[in-house]
Length: 351
Image (cartoon, rainbow, N blue to C red; front, side, top):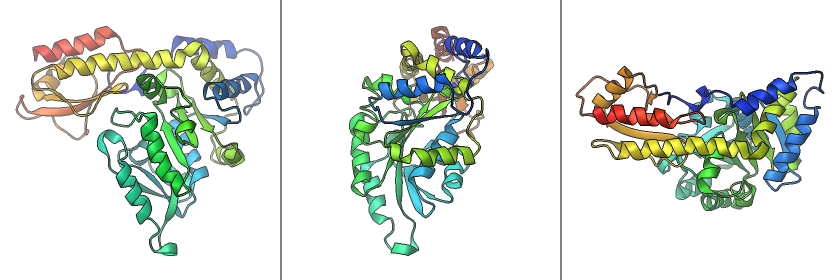
């Protein structure tokens, strides 16, 4: 009953097999290998973007921070949700790589930026000219840090507000595949067709050992990203080991299949918890994460049974009356078994 994080999941067997196959002989370094060329071509095909510039990096933090550095100068601000990963979990990396750009934090239900809040923030920025930070870029997280997704229409509305002021749009897609299969749309519809300029496509949380793709739908920014990636220490010399992971992941729709498995387990978990007396869902479970509250007695029983997940927020205590509800985050991954979900729900029901 492991629901701590999809970061803790194993590598998909197909991906591990591809790594083993790639570990024979020699290949060009720093992205000069054949697998990288195939991945670039495949991502352009999947996203219906034949001119897109595609780069691979090893972590989601480097993907987001380097991409934002190409979009936002040091004297400007990035508009993002106050619970965005770039705000809460990247140790100031976006500020560091941009050279000091500010993050303007916005509200909105379930981790989705409220359009009115964005419009007001953009209008308020740079009200005193040179004395203020300037308007920089918009960053959206899909799926959000609270388990919800942005539809193509929702992305287009927010991106439209940004673009009306000449601002580029970044999408943190650490769980992009989970959002995509939840919505049933195409990758293009959820990105550039809705106004996104650069996508950080995450694979590490969805079956890969460690690789993310940064896709610039406007190739004019490609050279700057290449320079920043190298200067920042994120250009892998043995680049083929990134490329073959991504290539296997994209083959035969594996990336969507893995995300679908995780989403299905989360949906079953959310439905089961919501049906229990004294329990509730704090946010809609639209991807692979479930945010729910249930009595402390249930938490105690789960921990005694070996279940692993995060209390949310993490500083909460299990001490107190058993009937008092306590919130938690439970994340499903591609390897989560239906039996794990059933076991957790059975423990909760007994408690």
